[in-house]
Image (tube, rainbow over all chains, first blue to last red; front, side, top):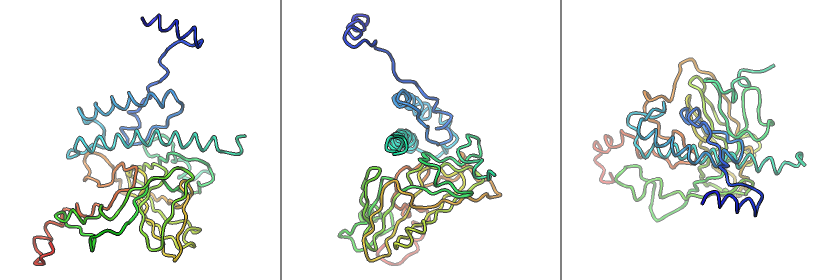
Length: 105
Length: 201
């Protein structure tokens, strides 16, 4: 089935189906409660599965240094969600700024 | 010659001053950095309650009922009316090491328009810096999202602070949008209320 789908896609578009996203190493940044600087679209899409995995690890093991003993699961979720949201937003802002720069023309 | 601030800015080391995004090199000075206005706002509004009440039992007229959330996009205008308080944040997400604290001052160009902006952030801070904006003039002022509105100055401190698990809980850690005052969550309010004879508690 997969090979059939691949053949149809290739015949119609000249491209094969493949995983386009790349999972970034979030822990180095998120463990320090810092945003991750997404460098391209493949990382932009890869941040979703990776951050989901990171959140579950922190809810289970509470290993990030910023997690205090009294911090609730909901607070951990809020902080990780904020880091993901701001990482994505900062990538978008950087791209828009670069594309709007008159000196780049 | 590179200053200590230059060396630490986004160095990737444990003592770095982390700022993301930096859209251009213009706002970076020898020991300071211009920061931009973010896109989320909490705007003060008038409602049917006579005052902001901080006791937790008065949650219907607490600080959150006096603010309304508003979002704009990069480059959009945001109007701040005379005598209006607006909570905003910097566009940049900041991470401070344990031996640096920062002070926020409004840029002179905005002070001359009648804008007052105040804030500070402690060692180990993580998040978008909260900005309390107030329009002292008698005319509405149009602010542009993403414009350089404040200057952050950084100072090294001797005693190391950190955001580790041993710390006291921080009310605003990791915030990326403006947060309504959490003064009503202060522990000592209940204690003070129990000593008051006024019925308003």
